[in-house]
Image (cartoon, rainbow over all chains, first blue to last red; front, side, top):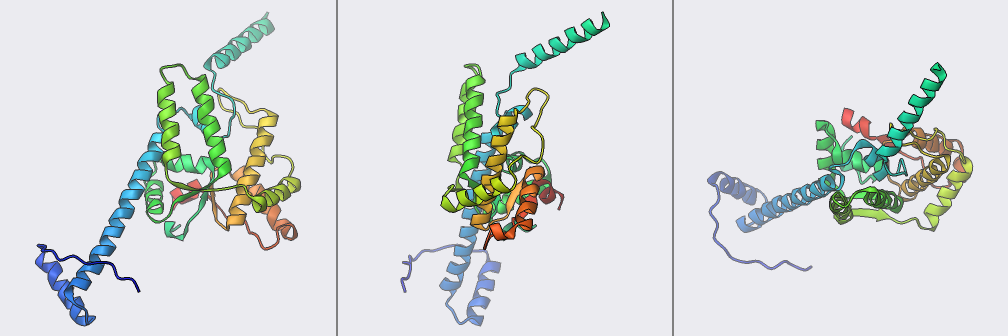
Length: 104
Length: 180
């Protein structure tokens, strides 16, 4: 089994955490360094996951920011024709002239 | 639904819906999901998306093009797991297309745009490919398109002999997650 390398360092920890770690070490017949190392490893992995997910969230926000609802339909592949405001305005004008002719 | 039960496959509209979701439940669920799993999509979703960006870019004036390009790059740089349309997926999609050749819902219309019959048929076939990807990958499909995907689900349920060792097609609608 491959062991990860260790380094000796000095840390200042909250006394409450240290007391809890000592109690766990005693109960599990482990040394204090192993207990603190395991807890730190779990916490840091969780933090890494949170940071990764926040960065994905940000990328997604950038990918879909600033688009109208019609443009989003285009981005979702639901409508496959680019929005053309002029076309819509022309359509309204055509409808207007038809209504006028009907009245005449 | 617990996001830890994933990973899930997201269709194009589900992916963008969560990215823009305003409901607190949906945002919390999305954040919780991303902490545990990557977003899984079909390569068809990437195709639809990039085609959309390209069409918007072509229609945009020079001043807006850099913003559209930045959004496209942000989309491509977002880490996700993309499932290919391999032989198995293509075979299942072919069965779906033969089972339900016509789209179950009419072409979409918005206040400015209308989908042609040909475009609707193409989108229906893409939906079949996305559903086939979910079946082959044995993943629940998160979607925002009940009209199409529910028709595929019930078609598969009524014809299990054409989909041996696959299915059922599990579906969850975005809004159902937001409502939890």
